[in-house]
Structures are given as C-alpha cells and as structure tokens.
Amino acid sequence: MRNREIILVVVNNSLGEVHFILPYLIKARKECDLDIYFYFVNSKIYDKTVNDTFFYDQISQNASILKPSEIFSFLLKKRKRVSLILKDTTPVSSSNIVVKIRHCCPYAKLIFFPHAYALLGYKEQGRNENYVYKKEDEVADYVLYGHPFDKPWLRQRFPERKLVFSGALGYTSWWRAYVSSYVEANLKNPATTDGKSMVVLFTIRDVHRIYLNAENFEYLFRTALKVLFDSTNHFVIIKPHPRQNINSLESFLSGYDSNRYTIQYHNTFVLACLADINLSFWSSAVTDCLAMGVPALEFHKFHVPFSQTVESEGGLESFYTHLGLAEKVTSGEELEGLLKLNEQGLSKMLRKQQKTFYKIFPDDQVGFNNFKALINREERSGYTMNRSAKSLFYFFLKSIYRKLKPV
Image 1 (cartoon, one colour):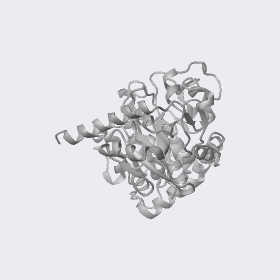
Image 2 (cartoon, helix red, strand yellow):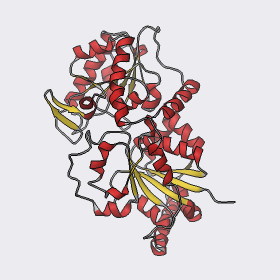
Image 3 (cartoon, rainbow, N blue to C red):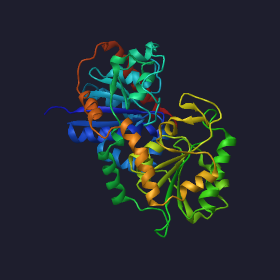
Image 4 (cartoon, helix red, strand yellow):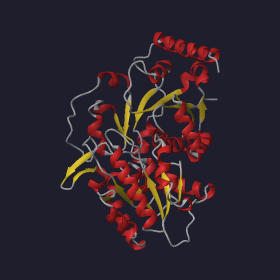
C-alpha cells in the first residue's frame, strides 16, 4: 500500500497560525490522501489551543499532535513521507528549529503562511519591492499570501517566483457553514437576553508600545463599557487578544452586572456565530466577523503611526476603516448611536462593508487549489545526507535531554 503523504505544521508564535491554516488542512484532508501532524514548539500556544474547544476538536479529529519527546522518532521513521512543512511568516534564521526539520526531510517543501488574516497593506502598489532577505529566500520554498494587498510587502522579503496566492479559505462560505454547523451542534449561546436586545462581540487587545498605549487602552475600554452597560441593554461577549493578560480587566469590570457579560476564549469565527455586531479595537477580528456575516465597528486611538495605519483628514486610522471594512468610531456618543441601530440599520451596514470585503477576499476556491497543488513529494535541491544526519542527531540529543531532565 502506498504511504500517504504528510503535512507537518510547526506552530511557534501565536494561535493566529492555527486560525489561518486550519481550514486549508481540513479541506485538504477531505480531498487528498494524506496525514497531518501538528508540532507545537511553544507549550503556551498548545495550552491556548486546548482551551479553544473548536480548534482542539478539529485538530484532534483531522490530525495528530506531536509531543516534543516524539519529534525525533517521527523524523527518523516518517521524514521521507513529509511533502509540506508549514510555518507562519515570522522571520527565521538558519538555526531555527523548522530549518533543522526541513534538513531531515528530503522531499519536503517549506511553506510560509500568513499570521492570521490581517491586512499588511491597503493597496496593490506603493512599497519598495527591491530588498530581499537572502537567508529567508534560501530557507523558504514558497510563501502563501491571502490577497493582493499583501504581495508588495512580501516581495520585500521573498522573490516573486516564491509567492503563491492562497486566498482566504477561512473567509469563504464553505468555512462559514462548517463553523456554524459546529457551533449549532456543540455550543450554547452564553447570552442571557430577552430576545429583544443584541449580543455584542467585543474584541479587544492589550497595551502595546506601538499599537495601543496604556492611556488610550483605559479610555477606550472604560468608554465602551460605560456605553454598553449604561446606555444599552445588550449582552456583551468580551474576547481578549490571544496573547493578552486578562487579570487587568477585572478592575474595569468590577462595577458592572456580571449577568450582562462573559469573557470567552473561543476564536472569533466561533464567537461571531453568537453575535449580532462586532465592536473591536484595532484587530483583524473585524474581517473575521464580516466573513461570518456580522457587521463591525472599530473603536481605537492610535498614538503613533506604523506600517498598518493611514494618515487621513481625521488623523491616523487603520486599513480596515480606511477601506470601509469597519465603521470608524471616535467617541462614546458615536458608539452609543451605532449600538442602538435596529436590525435594518445593521443589515445596511453589513451590506456596505461586505461589498468591499468580497472585492478583497473573493468567495471562491482558487487560492485553495493553488495550495493543494503544492502537496506532492519531490526531491528537493540542496538536500544533503550530511545536513540531514546532523539535524537528526540534534533532535536525538534533545530527546535524550528531555528524558534525563528532572520533572
């Protein structure tokens, strides 16, 4: 019997990596004869994946999870079956563990994929596209990108011949139906409403030296809570950022009725199925929600410009509001008015936002077919037995160390 090909996913930096790549893996497994393995380099990311029941259920049903103590045995026995090694686009050096794994696998291509579905740009041209990081060019075989706006940015790091359009499979009607079916069968809506008020999915992010300073975080969070709980009767699902420390939230929430809100750790695809509207700090959660048919409001204050902001007449704004993917909110008064829209008003907002959304993220399978075409084992140039042996020996030593290391 022919040995099935293997896709190995190396997860290291954030739950956003699972968020992006999971739809491709589930669909590829349904359509191709292959096995999927996940290797979590970072144990904290693994723990967060376990806490997200949807992600963990889907990985458990469609893939195998390799423990750190199992990676040497896996590579020793199955390295010749690996056709793709998948990792997010966070820069790597020649000593990175994913490079060592690649050295062991003679027929595998190393594919970099986007970190979540965030927009890196807001137009197809305009970046200096001549600079390429040579080391990354040598390491990666191909780099996936989800929409045309990302391509100029990636051309700064990789030559165009290595860029492969993968689309945004997590933003298609196929994935929306897949997630909705899971939520309907497995999750109870935590909202305790009377059926007359709305459910607001409030996606937030932590303080960051560039993205959101402490002063602006406090203003935004306090203002939003005051409007939500004092001026509306809505139920609020608070979704912290995956890397956010939530202990600081308790002091802000202590004065409000705990029956009016819940803090949830499910991913935004799942939580959007339970909501009528998304209120968000600057985040790709707005497009996640649009993909699930939920209109988005962005309430944010930028204190410094950075690569994902635009200078407009009203000051700095995000790509999302600049393109019309989210309604820009600048004050508590504006927020109160928008949160009091009726069903007809919300539908109008959603239609307007989705008109732009589907121009950027077409609801088709073109990108997935490009991804699927990469799943084939072929002898890789640059593979040497010497480097393979050295890398295998490295993983062997790591496995011995783990066995001897005191618990």
